[in-house]
Length: 293
Ligand code: DGL
Image (cartoon, rainbow, N blue to C red; front, top):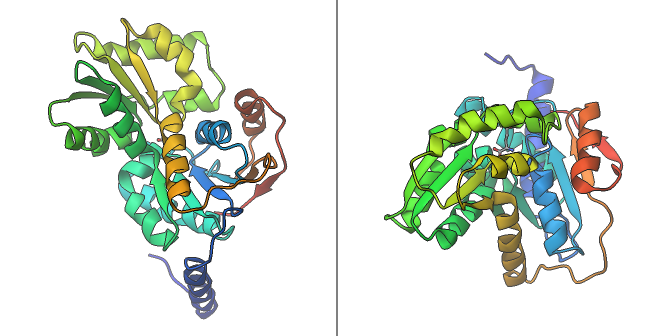
């Protein structure tokens, strides 16, 4: 049980007053796009947003101190989601992208509530929509964290759009640490991938959703391991197109020139973060701000 002192209570209520004021801030096309994930995985979303909308300023929070989320309970994931949103809200974003399928599956409502009038878009819905558009034979595979797969959120989102689609899901928990470790083409990754992806043998899937934003980092191994002609859906790429549409509809697209490098916030700064940033963003790590969670 949490025991609060008087000063804690004062601080907490002050924080919640500031937070609710922030929920009603006015946004402009120049306001940043806020993006968060449990760690480096959301950088795949940053990259996709930069490719789609190079003029947009980005503020990214990676909860590197508490990654992985996908092995945690729904209650813990919801608590983290609230805190992550509060961190981004203090930077007055015009939209929040939940670059984490696990949070999109289990706590999108928490993020929406905490964001107030700021629109929120999750990778899961974008990935599900694209899978439905792409599949021809209506057999879709989904890989994700244990929490995402157990929630059944992808299968629900896909079959809500087309009840005739058969969804086969497989949790691939070891892919997250392998991606965080930078084991993009390591023999260990290949071995684990062949074990996990055997779950799709005999299901005749023509589409596979990478239902975790860390997985595009391992895309080459995943593609090499799959048998047959299977279209890969990257939930990170899928969300970029939707974000552009949403901003355009709201009159919030930035029309300026090239944006500065993303403003990075992390809750811990392991050496790996800088190494992986260079690897996946193909540029040097900009200044990083350490935030307390
Ligand atoms: N990258 C996140 C996702 O899309 C979370 C991975 C994790 O922290 O377990 O699910």
